Amino acid sequence: MEVREKQQEAFSKVLMALIDAKKVSQRQLAMELDTSPSNFNQRILAGSMRPYMIMHLNEILNVDLIQLVHRHYEGEPLSNVIDYALNNAPVFSKPLGKSSPNANQTIKQQAETIKGLQTQIKQLMAELNQFIKSSKSAKSSAAAKKKSAPLKKSLVKKKR
Image 1 (cartoon, rainbow, N blue to C red):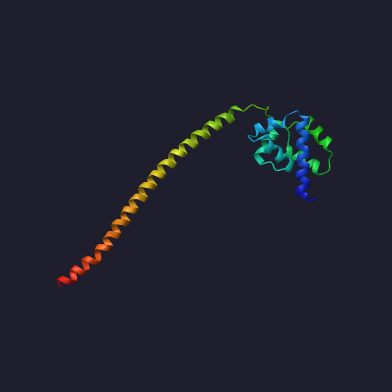
Image 2: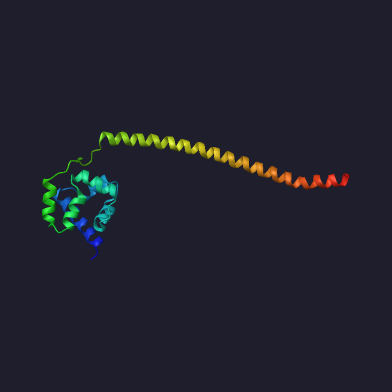
């Protein structure tokens, strides 16, 4: 078994044991992570959580998941790793299902920023469309001048 596969297996075992020990449902965690329960389960089994998911799990479960996985990967029995996790809570702690006021404020600010950016995009698109129209009309008038230029030259030659 390769190193990566062993790490993924350690991750899956530790996370599943933590979920059981903390008596949290996978469905609840999936909703907190804004993903479906089946996707969450697949990520657990594959050991392929995204960094933001791991950080969020750390907050929800009140653990340092990477440290726990590393300890188990290095050979510490799973039961010891879980006991350590249950008895030595890290500093970051966030109760399940509750957003912090700062998070809500950040979301509102992001929504306002997005709205402002959308307005800017609309203005830029309008300017771009105007530019395209003006360049098309400039090209057509330049083409018309080119067509009339040979006629003017031939008229000048005839007058001589």
